[in-house]
Amino acid sequence: MTLFIMGLYALASVICFAMFAVDKKAARAGRRRLSERSLLWSAALCGWPGGWLAQRVLRHKSGKASFIWRFRAAVVLNILVTASLIYACLFVSAHVALS
Image (cartoon, rainbow, N blue to C red; front, side, top):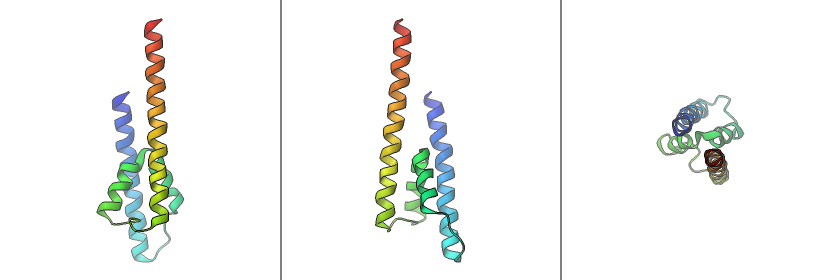
């Protein structure tokens, strides 16, 4: 289970980082950009480490306060859901082992 979760976060982080990079490139070129909603969803769906790294490395969306607080909320939501799922899996497996 641990390897699955690590792989999920790694893949989602790469995708999220790429989305931030595409949006940054579009912003510089004056082209149509990705919505903030899609960037936030990619962060909430386990990609927040990549989004955080993109904010630091690419300096994208790092100064917009309204985006930052929503990004942080997505991180907290993801951590709470992931921790709850891990706890539930451990609880079920411990209960089954005791039966």
